[in-house]
Amino acid sequence: MPIHEKSLIRPENLHVQEKIEVDGIDVSGHWSTFIESRVVTDYNEQLEEEIASLPGGEFIHRCWQCGSCTNSCTVNAINADFNPRYWIYLIRTGMEEELLRDKEIIWQCVSCNKCTYACPRDVVPEGVMKATSHWLELKGHTPKSNSMIFDEIFSEQVIANGKIEDGRTVRRFFARTGQAMMQPWMVEMIKSMMRNLPIGMLTRLGLANFITPRTSDWSGARDAMNEYIAEREAHHRKALRLDDLVQMAESEVGSR
Image (cartoon, rainbow, N blue to C red):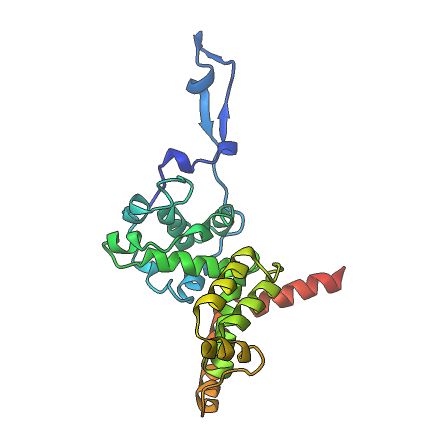
């Protein structure tokens, strides 16, 4: 389905003759605006399949480009460049180069799910946006986001111990993201806790920083989770051809 929105025409593809006359008629400015033909140089026919292989992107094939997702989008209301319908179109037609031009704003989805409620085809556009953001990270097109880093730290503790220790989670998050360990809000929170929490609870919170809380008989569940995660990661690497990309990069380095 062709794209007709004026906002989707790249400014660099618009050419205006400031001074031109045709058969004695002045057609300067707006009248002589031409749209340069778009040439796709890196068509990726597996792009839809790659997005569909990631959590949230499974139903992208259902989209019929009605625009309900973009029309209902919270972010689009304040930033017209945020256009889920257009990105789904690019993914389904394999226009990877065009998609990457918007890589800095695709991650801005706030997961309000208005698009998902409005979608008549159950595409789950919010899931597609998350899958696309994940795809950008896995492919190395964008750096790993803070939310992704936090998810990794959270998951590591659950898998290893079956429990979460808040203080350890926050400290590791700050360390991996290069943030100062003592944030002003944290200082205030600690002061409030010391004033209001029972001594017994404060003692347990303090000990948890030195003695890692663990769920008893967790080893079986941990092994099962690690096995499942390894299977999913292998599936994603195969679907996104990540190993092929690594080999190509290594070959290019070796040929220099």
